[in-house]
Image (tube, one colour):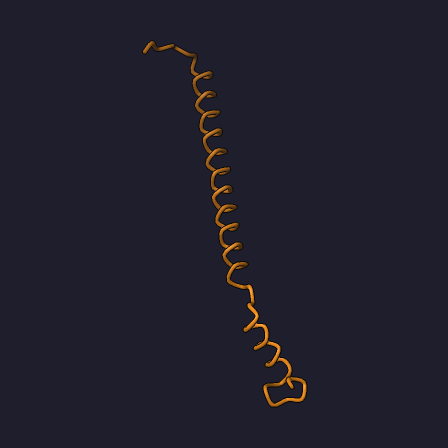
Length: 73
């Protein structure tokens, strides 16, 4: 590979821009990972928070005062 001699200021500026670009990409990937994790967590919560028909009747009975209340009959 051929080498190129650059003035000190140019080489330093290229290095700073390269580091800044790398940091920006790492920050963006971290945000993307957090977003993906949040989507997975929320979709799992939605799946397991759904109430079926048996659970729904049980909750209604509890809120009405139990099996012996007039509202449950």
